[in-house]
Length: 249
Ligand code: 13P
Image (tube, rainbow, N blue to C red; front, side, top):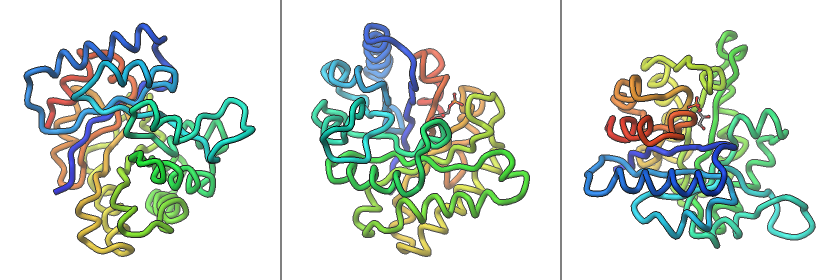
């Protein structure tokens, strides 16, 4: 059966010392507890190697990787470098990367291939902007994002992907998708996967929800049959806010 996952996306927050403290605090909060999901934190690159040494029960990921293997790409960090820190995950295609750094579906396709080649689990983000939802185009937009960046993969490799539906209008706005809106989109995503790879692969794919997910709405969102967890921004920056989301399963 597919995994439930609650992943924190720290974005560009916390210096190294603050990040280390937060990771240790989270690990302590989880100690001796049985939770019904995998817990992951996705930190800035510079935190990865240090945090990898401190955490054992929490998964670790980066928030981006280069679309090139190695070489003269000043400022970039490759999937191989991320894997060498001990991290197991990488967020790819976050809407902030798409919007502010010009990452296209074609570029993201390369990133996914490199992540998989380096045995990292991509947490691949998809989602529509407000104007697209208002025009009723959200399904088409999300389907295109999936098709153009992921549908070249074999069924075996697609099975290694975690998806995160993050409606852009819900990210950092305090406006969450309703439980019905989330379930409707997640069911559509699963159907789209099933049409390409079959229902077994679709049934094994974890599809997370992201966008103003917090302690007060996580339970209702995660209760949906096709919502397999969350990708959490703001509320992942403190253990007090993050733990109730982890415990919402
Ligand atoms: P918020 O939880 O702050 O809305 O951010 C969601 C997000 O972008 C996670 O990747």
